[in-house]
Amino acid sequence: MVTNQFFRQLKLYVAGLILVLISNVSVQADGNWTRFRGKDGTGVAVDHASLPSTWSASKNVSWIADIPGWGWSSPIIWGDRVFVTTVVSDQQNLTPSKGLYLGQGVRDPAKGVHHWMVYCFDLKTGHEIWKNEAHTGEPKVPRHPKSTYAAETPTTDGKQLYVLFGDVGLFCYDLNGKPVWSRPIEPKKTFQDYGAAASPVVFGGQVIVVYDNKDESWIAAFDAATGNDRWRKPRDETHSWATPLIWENDVRTEIVVPGKKRNRSYSLDGNVLWEFDGRMSNLVIPSPFVAHDLCYIASGYIGDRHRPTFAIRPGATGNIAPDGKFSSSEHIAWYQAQASSYNPTQIVYGDHLYTLYDRGFLTCHNAKTGEEVYSKRRFEPRGSFTASPWAYNGHLFFLSEDGLTYVVKAGPEFEIVGTSDLAELSLSTPSIAGDRLLIRTASAVYCLTEGAQLSEEVVRRRMKKAAASDIWLAAKDGDVKSVANAIGSGASVNARNENGMTPLMLASLYGRTKVAELLLKNKADVSVSNKDGNSALHMAAFLAHPEVVRLLLANGALADAKNRKGETPIGNLSEPWSDELAGVYRFVGNLIGEELDLDRIRKTRPEVLKLLKAAVSFRNENRSDK
Image (cartoon, rainbow, N blue to C red):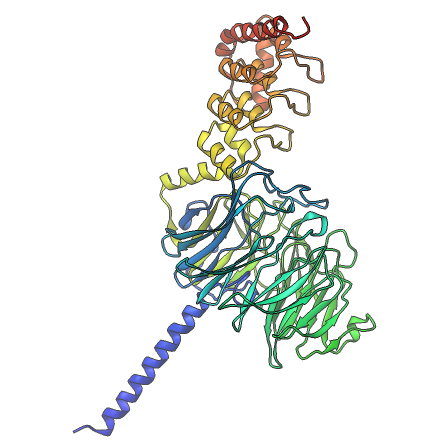
């Protein structure tokens, strides 16, 4: 006989089971990072005890996935899958640079065939699940010197993946990598040839894309199932790169898009709900986000005096600041005239809004009132910043372009509690899912979680591969594989570092014959010189590297070319060996950070001098004017 007690127990069991299922769904939802800066665009992750507060190239590293080519898009995460985009070039081009840049873009499109790629990795292991080539061809437009042709972060609704390459097209895949549909995007001329960068968002069966340019700006909604236009509206904007925000508030759901001329909100069918001229700075890059039922909009081009931040209340209609007096608008909760960064998007954590400035400062304001909590505080050691900050477990994280992350305790006092260094170019904004932090560097995606540890062998291999993002360091070290990887990833063999040195000059200076051979095969220029007028041959000859000298001469280097002091490679070797000359070599060794083998140099100098004289003699004998 079934008793009432049995039914009561059964009900409790079923209720408990339902709670467990709801809890599991909630946890999985919290573990997804579906767009730039997460599902809600705030950069704030759900707290987890296993999210790391410190890391290194091996400490707290679960796995590293090498990413070929160049891209500053963020990884996104759904379930146990990580999606990331990149563009790989068949020909070396100018590599993205760090630091503040105030000039024009790269004036010409990159050369050679490029491959616009989408990768999927396993979140737990880092193993590649699938990859797909979305587009192949030569770029039609230039780009910003700091940017790449894979600047836009993809997005997902958990059913499909939506990948935007802004000057090429919008591509849709199922989560197993099967192409579903694609829509080409006609590339347009952008302000200063900076290219596209705004990431897409998906909501309610629509993929929202904004493309502001110099010719024909627009915002459009594409049907998530078919790729067909739902609607498309022109935009009177040219200087905006911000990712749009889907703002779900108590009044309605709307699409917020900043702009230099107007900040606007659109309905889900493309009609303007509200707008206002915020006297935004010249370049609008930070993306809008919501906290405390307020929508934050900002722009802070470093060359402008007015670098505003606005906190907007929901429910606005029409022009919310027709007289330009922001403080008197009922829909603008607060406004600060000089409280925005240039590239990074701000973050609200708790009751505080933090603004990270590109040149390495942090400010804090009350997120609800706009009142200043503390003024600019500098990060030490100094660095430049492009990636947007993120937060969890009571801390904020700020990733410099050098790969150094500063950890700041949340609250009204500026307190750096630690730093973590990956020592590689880093301009991409990280992503978080559950107990996993994903940081994309120039060459890889790092998956970080508390307690993980890579083996020493994996770390050594990774350090070599990371060097590919610095072709000069790889050339100096004689790392042929890393130089080849760098060239394959688009690094220019004739690029100059801050000292005016090309990779070939460094390979010649340090006697890296195999590297010099590889660089010359890839059309390294033997005729260029550094700031002192010294060519690669000047360096190889003076340091007495005969094999490198032979290579350079065979590729057209001139043995009698003069530097700015009028010195030639031949002349530098004509002086007989002496204690004084040995002292000069010791001094040079100190300058280049290497203890020179003086005995080797003394013995090979005559051989190198003979090679140089023979080259001049051969050229003179075969002159066409004889």
